[in-house]
Image: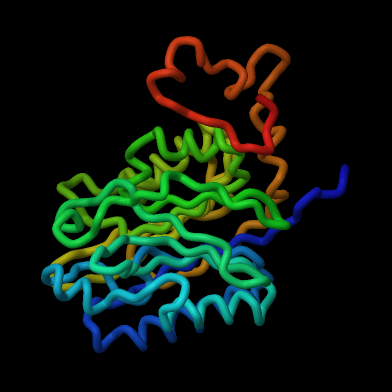
Length: 295
């Protein structure tokens, strides 16, 4: 058996950050404590939920603005960056980003050498449209020493273009930050999985890419959250258990991150990326490959 080219221990953290300016420090400290626990478990790529330090259900735009901070110079972001540097790991975490008078639902990637980059949520859910601006950075993929990392946030997974574009740009893993909310029933099937879990598994399967999805639990201001965090392999199946709907948990998976680059070859005649009919639909969809990939 050959040695892995890029061995990575991934962890997704599921917990209950609460909205309210008075809760920001507790949320931040809890995120750092849980990330520390993941480090002690051997993780070197850690994914936390959407809006990790603020909770989700803001009262209005002014409330959202009060919870926000700049990237990468905001106080929470600086602490997360320092954590990644100190522990020599990669950390993906969500927050409300302030850029002048605009607000974005943002995911940040930090690593051993500091701030790497950010992604601004493209598809806004429900009341988010009243305080956040839709993302304007496209769907970046970040090259790192452990592999190529893409980000998406929550509602994005319902749009198959997002994981497809990230995978077409060469992402080895997609880190998915979520606050999956309760919607009209049925919420779960007999196996205890929610629709978001299946969408994550499907996106991993049809794009042959790892997806590490961190969600949240709990209730705030009348909203309830689904949990169900998971780490999906390139074949779509969860690597280990899918998290519960209501417990704080950390899930781990040991993977060879760059093995995603050879995963699309299923047999002698079928390769998901090669079999795409770009002659029929690329002009309409506008996909572009990562600069490192052959054209």
